[in-house]
Image 1 (cartoon, rainbow, N blue to C red):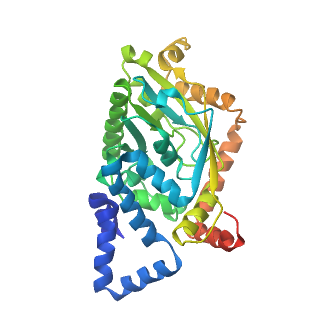
Image 2: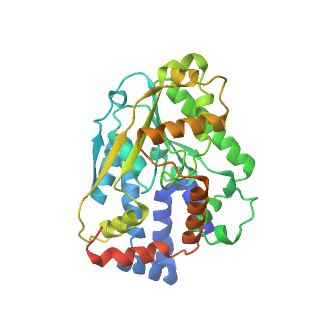
Image 3: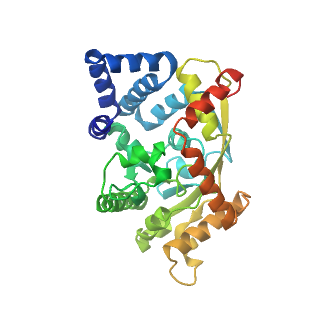
Length: 340
């Protein structure tokens, strides 16, 4: 596994595909595993398709590659309201704040509809490493809890996502430097009139606590540039982790399924300079994040969870992630039920 992660880190998804072909020719164990995957699972097909889309970026751009990925999954979307003119080619910088991220592919949806050249998606480093073409549109970050110095407790030891991120073997200092560089790159993109996409709560529902990446990014924008930066929240309906796991399986196993239509709801654009003037003093990172999150919750009429709900939700997530085959169980539970 470590060798595979190292290859992925250096050569992306294309390197992984070449490695798997190579080892299958010389190892009967790997050959059997790959045959089983091709017969019953989806990883080989998913990896090959992802490599093809990554190559497509170099010739047709990120928007076309994202559209192709969504088409493969049978996903379309409706916009409420229609696509803001801010995303059609104006010069002002736009910081898109994803209020929720429940189904893996929300960033792909946004990349498919933004009609501007300067676009940066702030994303976990593990996905950033997929390929050099994808990296032109992304900025890598990761949480310090995935640092190699951190000890794994019982929960994180059996958490598949945590194991994948920890396999990158970055130190806390390396993570801090990488995050700082990425946020500064995001700042430059906004100051030059580009679009930056950020999901401050990470993957999951809108109930998750937001991290301070949003406020760190905002606070690094030069004061004389803030008048030209717009905050634009977006909320997604119609997606979810279980639904997307099943959809991925059925799509890459060529099993028929109904199309999925996702509702993409854009909130009201907010000028960053005017928003910051609403504070009596310069807001701390936590204060800014809390105030803007409250504003977006009210705008989308999202019930604000109390603190006990937040921690109960965290505990539930930990319990669910203890089982590494949770996704497979959920898949087979619904694959032949005719529901997607």
